[in-house]
Length: 136
Image (cartoon, rainbow, N blue to C red; front, side):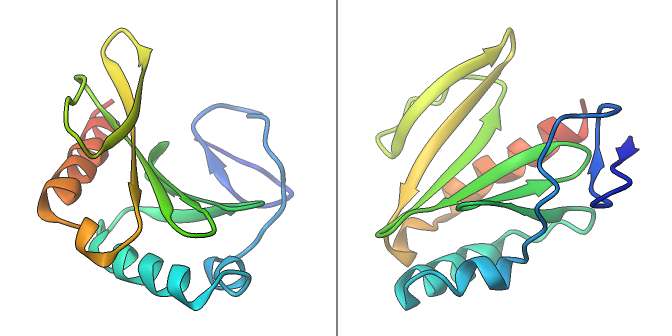
């Protein structure tokens, strides 16, 4: 692990390229509609991993990390895109997009525009993403 001496953010690789713009989740949410604020808060309350942290990157992304990213949340105007990893391709109607990122890793995108979209299946996929990154 390497910690940037300017912004104090930890990274998996030494001297990893990044922007040192520090912003809190609260500050990012303050620029969003009450609907998106509530939707994110309901979602975020379900993502409870003791050793994870959140990092905000402008203009609209919240990274959930342990040693590296296991979940990305992109705040849109009318919905939230959730990006997570899996070691296999998930074929499901709520998966908006998938991309193979390495021999044994796929990133999947799910859009949520209602609290009902935050269901146990999605949360299980996110937990699997966490476990996948934690074990690598």
